[in-house]
Image 1 (cartoon, rainbow, N blue to C red):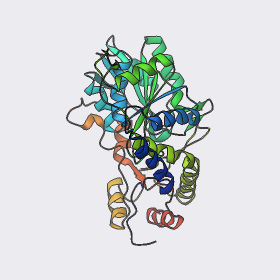
Image 2: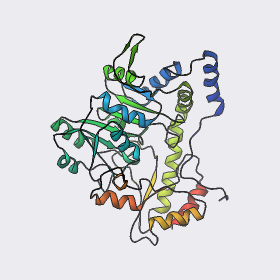
Image 3: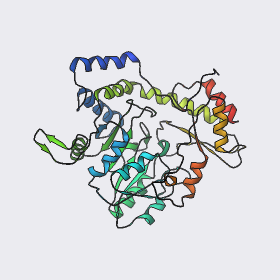
Image 4: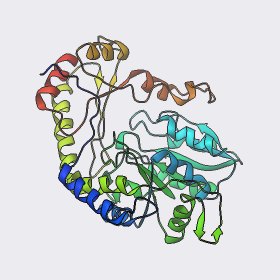
Length: 362
């Protein structure tokens, strides 16, 4: 292994000439934003790739999450969600003036535990915002059944699931809305970006107006919206990436398979699995460091860093351990947050690098 650092992630980039060809068109047209031709082309191609009916591109996932509530008419009340997630999930709820209500996670999937949701429902509950953690599917049937029973909306923070499928198709088809991330660290990136997936044209039209200040036309503004539009430069990146994304996911699978082969018998380490998926996207390789492993999670992270290998305690700390959120007793989520470690995972991670990382872990 070379002496160069190995970072936890490395953005996948398409061939530069293919990206430049889209940039040349932008320079010719002088159309930079406000739903230009590349924006429209990327929406159409993503609908085809993900096999979803409607998609609205955003400048980032967090603005998409924030937009989901007003688009669904949720202006006040409580939203049930997971404490084991990136802060953007809970921040979006708070920014919309709503109250996040946290429940514990399932110890196997690390997703929100549907058996905990119903006890948290009150007359003020308006929605469930669930997270498909590490690209593994939530129990979508159980969550939808609870939502139907209690008249709740379901929004999926689908930041991790690009390209992942269950037996019915894309995970992004579930819920009233699903919000994707196209951040540089994700399987599919547009430098920065995101999208909302919905199921009917009226909802898409509402989303598109909302992300453009609520503008209907030159004479009308029918809602208090925000600026969530994706630029043509970012759409160009997505269009250049999309033809290569299946190959990139195959390379991620190579990395996953070799890690799994080398680490599966290491005492004290619990490895990820993608049960329930017809197609995984291998976005992350989280390991859970158990009590019978010789080092704590933090000491293991330090040891790897001393060898130039940068991991990530993702997700740590719990949202409920932050000063701006209510604390609570979430033993499963707390245990995961204190013991989870994401190993380097990206398409061009070399086999020799994977072996070196695994040797240190063994």
